Image 1 (tube, rainbow, N blue to C red):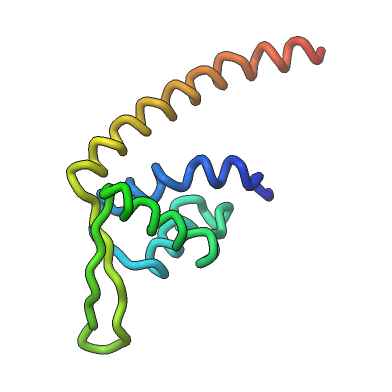
Image 2 (cartoon, helix red, strand yellow; image 1 turned 120 degrees about the horizontal axis):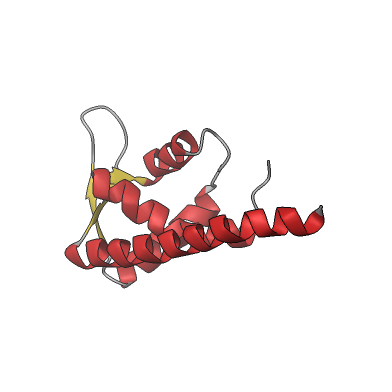
Length: 114
Protein backbone atom coordinates (compact mmCIF):
# COMPACT_ATOMS: atom_id res chain seq x y z
CA UNK A 1 0.00 0.00 0.00
CA UNK A 2 1.35 3.40 -0.97
CA UNK A 3 0.25 6.01 1.57
CA UNK A 4 -0.22 9.46 0.01
CA UNK A 5 2.32 12.21 0.54
CA UNK A 6 -0.20 14.52 2.22
CA UNK A 7 -1.04 11.96 4.90
CA UNK A 8 2.63 11.10 5.43
CA UNK A 9 3.50 14.79 5.79
CA UNK A 10 0.61 15.43 8.18
CA UNK A 11 1.64 12.54 10.42
CA UNK A 12 5.37 13.35 10.47
CA UNK A 13 5.35 15.73 13.44
CA UNK A 14 3.39 13.52 15.83
CA UNK A 15 5.35 10.44 14.78
CA UNK A 16 8.74 12.05 15.32
CA UNK A 17 7.70 13.59 18.63
CA UNK A 18 6.23 10.30 19.86
CA UNK A 19 9.39 8.40 18.90
CA UNK A 20 11.55 10.95 20.72
CA UNK A 21 9.22 10.77 23.72
CA UNK A 22 10.34 7.12 24.00
CA UNK A 23 14.03 8.08 24.11
CA UNK A 24 16.53 10.31 22.35
CA UNK A 25 17.53 9.15 18.90
CA UNK A 26 19.29 10.08 15.66
CA UNK A 27 18.04 10.32 12.09
CA UNK A 28 18.70 6.83 10.76
CA UNK A 29 17.31 5.22 13.93
CA UNK A 30 14.16 7.35 13.64
CA UNK A 31 13.71 6.18 10.04
CA UNK A 32 14.06 2.56 11.17
CA UNK A 33 11.61 3.09 14.05
CA UNK A 34 8.96 4.55 11.72
CA UNK A 35 9.33 1.55 9.42
CA UNK A 36 9.15 -0.80 12.41
CA UNK A 37 6.06 0.86 13.94
CA UNK A 38 4.25 0.83 10.58
CA UNK A 39 5.20 -2.77 9.78
CA UNK A 40 7.11 -1.42 6.80
CA UNK A 41 4.16 0.50 5.31
CA UNK A 42 5.82 3.88 5.94
CA UNK A 43 9.24 4.13 4.34
CA UNK A 44 10.55 7.61 5.04
CA UNK A 45 13.66 8.98 3.38
CA UNK A 46 16.39 11.28 4.67
CA UNK A 47 15.02 14.00 2.42
CA UNK A 48 11.68 13.79 4.17
CA UNK A 49 12.89 13.38 7.76
CA UNK A 50 15.63 16.00 8.10
CA UNK A 51 13.47 19.01 7.16
CA UNK A 52 10.99 17.85 9.82
CA UNK A 53 13.76 17.55 12.42
CA UNK A 54 15.11 21.00 11.53
CA UNK A 55 11.62 22.55 11.77
CA UNK A 56 10.96 20.89 15.13
CA UNK A 57 14.32 22.15 16.37
CA UNK A 58 13.49 25.72 15.26
CA UNK A 59 10.16 25.45 17.10
CA UNK A 60 12.09 24.22 20.17
CA UNK A 61 10.03 21.01 20.27
CA UNK A 62 13.27 19.03 20.10
CA UNK A 63 16.90 19.73 20.91
CA UNK A 64 19.88 18.18 19.19
CA UNK A 65 23.43 17.47 20.25
CA UNK A 66 26.35 15.84 18.50
CA UNK A 67 27.75 12.62 19.89
CA UNK A 68 30.34 10.11 18.75
CA UNK A 69 29.61 6.54 19.84
CA UNK A 70 32.49 4.33 21.00
CA UNK A 71 32.35 2.57 17.64
CA UNK A 72 31.00 4.56 14.78
CA UNK A 73 30.77 7.98 13.32
CA UNK A 74 29.57 11.20 14.83
CA UNK A 75 25.77 11.58 14.88
CA UNK A 76 23.32 14.25 15.88
CA UNK A 77 21.00 12.94 18.58
CA UNK A 78 17.64 14.55 19.23
CA UNK A 79 15.54 14.64 22.38
CA UNK A 80 12.05 15.97 22.97
CA UNK A 81 11.73 19.14 25.05
CA UNK A 82 8.96 20.13 27.47
CA UNK A 83 7.57 22.33 24.73
CA UNK A 84 7.64 19.31 22.41
CA UNK A 85 5.80 17.18 24.97
CA UNK A 86 3.06 19.80 25.14
CA UNK A 87 2.87 19.88 21.33
CA UNK A 88 2.72 16.08 21.25
CA UNK A 89 -0.19 16.06 23.72
CA UNK A 90 -2.08 18.52 21.51
CA UNK A 91 -1.26 16.51 18.37
CA UNK A 92 -2.54 13.37 20.11
CA UNK A 93 -5.87 15.08 20.86
CA UNK A 94 -6.20 16.30 17.28
CA UNK A 95 -5.39 12.92 15.75
CA UNK A 96 -7.75 11.11 18.12
CA UNK A 97 -10.56 13.42 17.01
CA UNK A 98 -9.74 12.86 13.33
CA UNK A 99 -9.65 9.09 13.96
CA UNK A 100 -12.98 9.16 15.81
CA UNK A 101 -14.60 11.18 13.03
CA UNK A 102 -13.32 8.83 10.33
CA UNK A 103 -14.53 5.80 12.29
CA UNK A 104 -18.01 7.38 12.36
CA UNK A 105 -18.04 8.18 8.65
CA UNK A 106 -16.61 4.93 7.21
CA UNK A 107 -19.73 2.85 7.94
CA UNK A 108 -21.97 5.60 6.49
CA UNK A 109 -19.88 5.72 3.32
CA UNK A 110 -20.04 1.92 3.00
CA UNK A 111 -23.84 1.93 3.43
CA UNK A 112 -24.29 4.71 0.86
CA UNK A 113 -22.37 2.67 -1.71
CA UNK A 114 -24.69 -0.35 -1.30
